[in-house]
Image: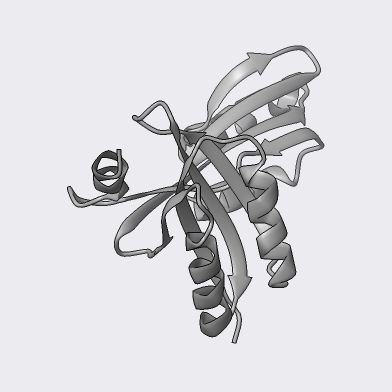
Length: 171
């Protein structure tokens, strides 16, 4: 049975690695739903978070094959109880003067910031768990959405024993 996985990789910051990783996922018939990549505290390392779906057996094989890539330092699946997930949404909505107070009200309920306002539109910024983003979008779909950007999920482990330990010990 397929389920959602949030996979984190700590990798050396080398050109072409992301293409090889996405090719590996493709060969194993995993669709990448979202992917984020950023530098870590160590200049030469990058943290990649990939959201995908699959079954347990294929996911184990995918992780094993990912670990074989020379640049990969660590691969692990994030779990709901041991990790925090966040996503960023930028949402541009067509607005009229009559709708301003209701739009402002919804943004306050969800903790969204109004980062731009013109006579014709309003841009919101919202950071939170993906379910919070989805709930906000469900309310906002009743307004004409002009543009929308979502970053995809990024995840970090709770507690002191984290991927950062691996980053320093393999130097």
